[in-house]
Image (cartoon, rainbow, N blue to C red; front, side, top):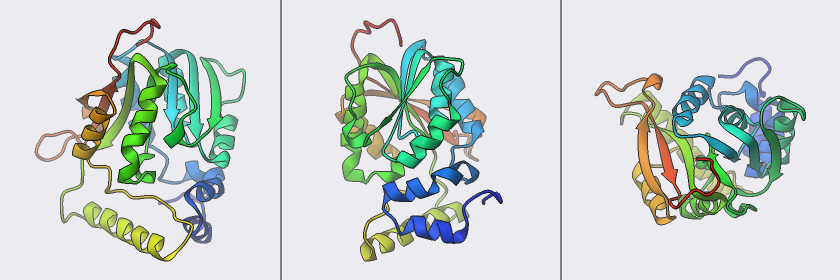
Length: 250
């Protein structure tokens, strides 16, 4: 699962016994050498799909980590891309990956909790990759409401969502086992490390997005493959803050 440059078993164990924030501070220097980083093929598929929804002037990467999503925003936005994360270690790696003076739109980094975003309605586009397992189901509506409040009227919040693995498959039991182990760990150990794979279900997500004020549609990401029944392995969730767009962006 890991390259030789990735974290050791001991380093992963120390991370897993830390808080979510401190765990990612520890993992940050080697994060991009792990399978936790969103694969390039997913980033590329989302970039191509979202480009058809633009144009965009300003973009926000929610829970940006080491900046993979900001790399997408720099291809899609004309003026500014902002990455926000609560881990100082992850932000340090992101800053190093996109040094000042790089070509493309201006890039800014903000350390903040996504459950309390420090932005006025300033963005045409918000996106996120691989971060939602760090939020408990009860926190999801509040997270979506914060993103809604950071978007201009007409702005769009997008993220890929994979289809659940078939019940009884190896992937199903792998995710089930991981979540079970994490629940035991958090019941017995403090501080908690929140990371659950099976709590971000499509029906619940759509309901929370709608309650937060978004109008939601799904776009198939067919280049990421099809399931045996012909349905896509992944979809792009497109949640729009309705209203007149006065920015000239999305």
